[in-house]
Structure formats: C-alpha cells, structure tokens
Image (cartoon, rainbow, N blue to C red):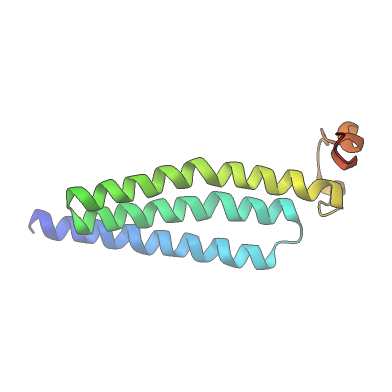
Length: 121
C-alpha cells in the first residue's frame, strides 16, 4: 500500500466521521427540549464534525493553498462558535427560553433585573 492510499483512507474516515457528527448535531437541534441543550448541540459536535471534515479535505487535497484556507476556516470556527453560543444563551435567558428546573446552579438569577432593564442614556 502506498502512502497516497493510506492518506486517502484516513481522509475518508475523517470525512465520514465529521459528516456523522454534523448530522448528529443537526438531529439534536431538532430533538433537544430547551435552549441550553440545543446550544450545546450546535456548538460542540458541530465544530468537531467540521474540523474532522476539514482534516479529511486537507488530507485529500494536499496543496499549500488549500490547506492554508482550511486551517483559516477551522481557526475562525473555533474562535466564533463558543462566543456565538454564549451570546445566544445570554440573550435567551431573560426571555424564559431556559428550563431553570434542569440547572444545578443559576448564576444569572441575581442579575436578572440588570439583564431585562432597558439601557440608560
């Protein structure tokens, strides 16, 4: 077996694994009951699935420009997905989109009035 064949097999495994993780994240977005669990499904397995797909594409393409582009995509995804999930959680909290009976600790409850008051000029 040549090195190209081994790299193609590893790329196929990464692509299939990433696609399955992304599919699982999509199903979880539909099936999970509240905002926090959906937010978790949108952030964690989706990012890992995308990174696996990017690794698979990088192993298959093997050119400098393509790998650089794929690395940039992965870095931007890692930088923006947690921030977006955090902001979605903070925006949904004052509107009652979170099931507080499932929380072990509720650190925002003491600051709820600050979250719901309109900003002062």
